[in-house]
Length: 286
Image (tube, rainbow, N blue to C red):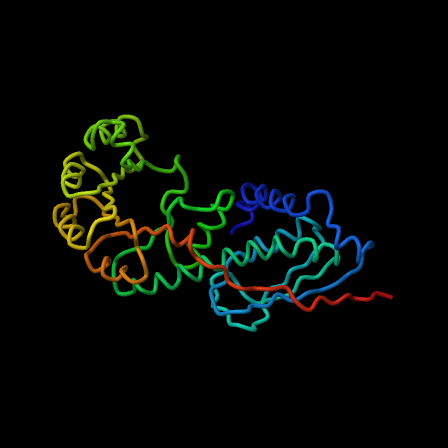
């Protein structure tokens, strides 16, 4: 995550997370460490995975105190191993203690998503199908979770509702059909926006092709239906498969020739990667 993005977008969410956890004071820390004392603590990985979110982890501490120094031996996207020391955090002990949980929450969550995504992407090796995330993200965490998907080797679908046109079932019902929905979107949206249509059956696929949709989503279809849909579309639109995508069936789906597979599980079901801050040492300065 680059510094500009961090300052413009991520900082406000990190600040909210810190305020949520600390509120008016950290009672435990203030009880045992009422005054400044320099210290250092190790960042240790407790299981194998892909690391993501180190800049966010660091920013938590430097937001509390700019003098905090975070030194990491790994970079986002690196494969890390159980027991590996990933770096150290040095600074005011009060900052190390108060920022620990929030910093680890970000790093564990983002690394878990990157790890899960990496494993799913590996199943698509040798195919032309790309893996996409969705908007099924944790409120206030989208920028971090979608970044983690990219670190894991996946690609981002639209970031938010302003980012692209996706006509889902309720949009189509509101407009009075696929053709009318596409026509309305074409007339309203900027010409640089592609129009994607969610289809649930082969009749809708045919209507979306005839309406000139740029991308056709095949939602919750059987493999047989998807194969027929790809044949009907015949390269006249990009294809995306969505709905009940699992690690067990994704290779079968990719074999049908779809351009993209989107999976909400990348962000809503990935387990965290277990990472800890351990061995805090107080540096006695004479």
